[in-house]
Length: 153
Image 1 (tube, rainbow, N blue to C red):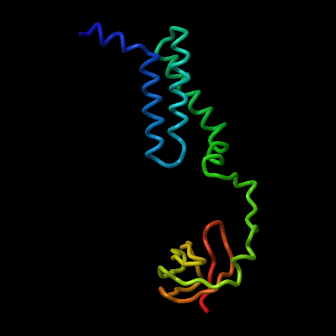
Image 2: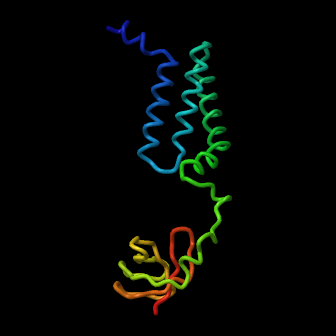
Image 3: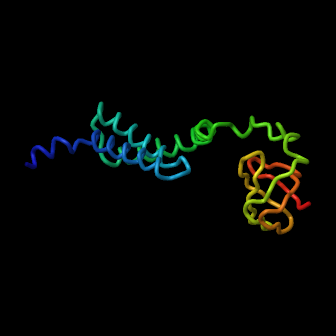
C-alpha cells in the first residue's frame, strides 16, 4: 500500500496539486492575489519535473516566483479581468447624459454612507451632502465611476 502512495508523492505532482488548489481558491476570494501563488507553485512543479532540487530550493523558488509575478503582473491582469484599465478610462465620457437629469431614491441616502437611486430603469449607488428619504426625486449633479452625485429638489 505504501509503495503505491509513494509513486504519487513526487515533488512535481505535489507542487502541481498545490498550485491547482490555490487557483481554485482564487475563484472563491476576491483580490487576484492567491492566483500568483498558484502560478509560483506551478513554476516549482515544472522545475522539479526536469531537475532534482531540495526542499529549501523549492521553497525559495516558490516564494520568488510568486512574489515576482504578483508584483509584475497583478495590476495588468486585474485591469484585464475588471474589463478596463483605469489609466485609459475617460471619466468625463457621457457625463452630459447624467448631469441635470432626475432620478428617484429607492434606498434612503445618508451622507458618507450613500444610498440608491433609480435612473433610466437601473439602480445606481448614490451620494448626497444631506439625507434624502426614499421615494424623493433628486437631480444628478455629477458622476464618480458608478456612483451618482445627487441633490434634493
